[in-house]
Length: 167
Image (cartoon, rainbow, N blue to C red; front, side, top):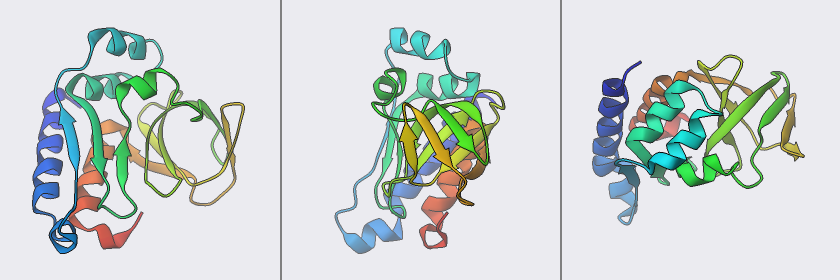
């Protein structure tokens, strides 16, 4: 995983969003891949609690908003992730138990989070109960989604190319 993989995938996601048939169909589709340097002090704060590849992503991109892909795919702004995502989980229990960094959502109540004990794993957290920052679920949809941030971005790109396939 390198910064070039992240940069390449962000460029492809942006290009796909710009030419999306779903966007053209709805006519007013909006998207934002907010690429650019982030405030270094926020990145330093993230480094103390997040896997290396998530930090590398946020060094290159502030957020991703793709509301026209399925229910939507959103990578939350760094400020929200550093501040604990205001009500987002910091731990998951059930089918998988681990500390996590929640960094995104799908517009339908599900979340995307990166494990800390197995940092190469991005989890899909379907809508569920969060008590005191702990996500509780035995739902079969609560599962690993991708390998690391590069795998997640590749998944986002694939979903933007084929939004009808769902999760």
